[in-house]
Image 1: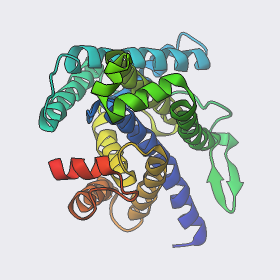
Image 2 (image 1 turned 180 degrees about the vertical axis):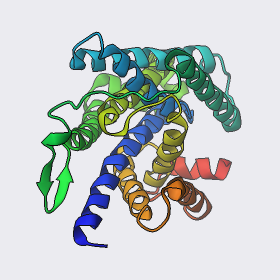
Image 3 (image 1 turned 30 degrees about the vertical axis):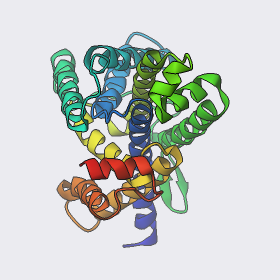
Length: 297
């Protein structure tokens, strides 16, 4: 393998790893606030791309993306209100089954609305011909959007949870929901907000990656598995860990294409997930939440 080819695989891995990291961050937000492992998170990414693709025919691109993010956030809030809020101390297995059922429901709804075809958005800046060369590697402007959006999302979430009253309330709810409720924190509304925020972040990722990866009704399942793998690898609740773990998984997956047929690419994520749950359920960064989840599994 030449150096230029290696760098091209590396760039592709970083790009897709960034998307996996954003999906994992959605898992983290919901799990931290509610203890729910939301396997519908991948469908939120799909919905963002599909809705934006439809809206882009009617609205300017920035407005189409904004509408897609807002609409998907509303869907996320609705999922919590309809399928999660009424549960009383449910088991982990019950929550997993419910969220997988929600994912299937959203996928079938998308199939009914948009069909089996793929959709994409135009490049946010420039086009395919605007790619520039860096150390012999062709870099698309949209790749910079993907990487920049991921880093900005992690940074803004750190500011939100560390320096805002609402973020502090969500952290208090995550640490001890009963104590937070006794202190007057509206825990039910915060749980709904966590689903809406995770859905909005997922939708934004779906919009940003759409110009280079395309979107169809069926992409959510694979993204959910890889996002969950990254969430466990980085430690549940750790956004910075999710970013690092997402990049690692993306690069491993990309480099595997040079060794095995593309059809085996998804095996990498499953192998990593099984290895982590078997030998280090706390993840790379030692999250106690991830450890408990591994023990529960």
